[in-house]
Length: 362
Image 1 (cartoon, helix red, strand yellow):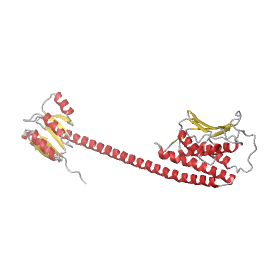
Image 2: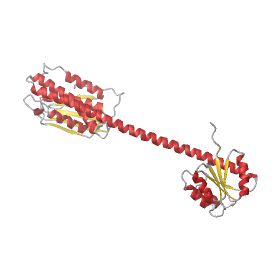
Image 3: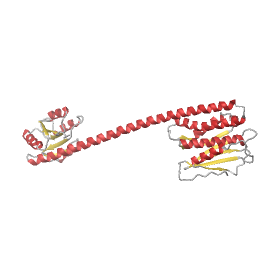
Image 4: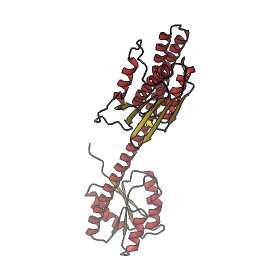
C-alpha cells in the first residue's frame, strides 16, 4: 500500500512567498497548507493531520520563536523547520535549542524552495526514525515487563511446588516415625528410623526452598540445623542429645544440598549406632568454607573402628554415602589421628564436572 502524501503547514505572513513554496512543494508530492500567523498555525496543528511545519521567524503578533515554543507544548507535535531571512546565527541556535528540527535562511528565489524541500524531507525522516526508536523501546519495555511477570509467576509456582513436596515428604517421615515408635523389633525400628532420616533430608531442602529468598540455592547452616533438629526428634533422639552443629553460611544448589544431607544422615546414624555402645555421647558436625573449597566433618569420641562390623548390616548406608559423594564430586576421608571417629568430606562450592572425585576409606 502506497503511503499517503505528507502534509506540510507553512506558517508565513507573506502570501506571495507562500504561493511560491506551495508550487514548489506540490511538485514533490506534498499536501500544502498555509497559515498567515502563529496563532492560526498553532490552532491548525492542534487539530492534527500535519506531518511537518515550516515556520517563519518574522511575523506580526507571535514571532517564530514564540510560536515554536507553543508548538512544542502540543502533544505529538510535528517536526518544525525554522525559516528566517536573518543571518543572525544566534536565532538559529535559539530555535534549535527550543526544539526545531532544522534551520533555514530564506530568499525569494528558487533556491529557497529546493533547500526547504530538502530540510522538510530530512525532518520527516528524522521524525520517523525517532518514532521507530520510541516504538522499539516501548516494545522492549513491554517484553521486559512480561518477562519479569512470568519470572515472578514461575518463582511463585516453584515455591508452591516445593511447599507441597516438602509437606508430603514430611508426612511420610512422620508416618515412618510413628511406625518405628510402635515397633518392638529393634532391627525394624532402626531401619524405619534410617528411612525417616533419608526422607527428612530431602524434605528439608524443599522446605528451605519454600521459605528462601532464592529458589535456586539452599543456605546450608539453616538446612543442616533443621535436619539435625528432625533427627533429635526421631526415635533415636535420646541418643542425640549431644548432637551439635557449627556451620558457615554456605549457599549451594538444591541437588547438592540433598546429597550432603543424605550423607550426614547416614554418618550421624552410624555414629549413634556404633560410637557409643553403652549409651550416648557427643557428635559434632562442622562446616566451613575457604574460597571455593568446603569442608564438612562429622566427629565422635567413641570407640572408633576397633569393633567388629554388625553382621546384620546391609551396607545400604555405606552405598548411599558413596553414591552421594559421587554426586557431590567429593573426597571423603577418615582422620586416622582422631581417637574416636572423624569423617571429613571435602568438595568444591562451584561444581566442576571435569574434576574426578575420590572416595577413600582411610
